[in-house]
Image 1 (cartoon, rainbow, N blue to C red):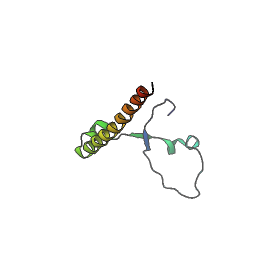
Image 2: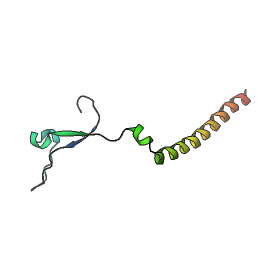
Image 3: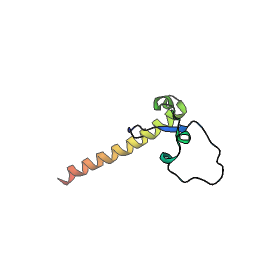
Image 4: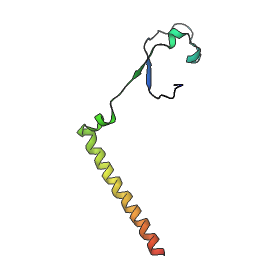
Length: 84
């Protein structure tokens, strides 16, 4: 949006397409085709992670990735000590 707000929007009215398709930008369409629009909201991230089916696999993946990253960082730091 012009204000910088980011969101998912849907046009409230749906019109049937009749005849030749119009290749205009939405800004140039008549007002009744463009407005009103409604913002659509989804579930919050915290609500999604309350579900155990989502939380447990995510935790497992985080643990695996953290272990790999820690080993890599430790090896890097040790290599710097050995080269000096």
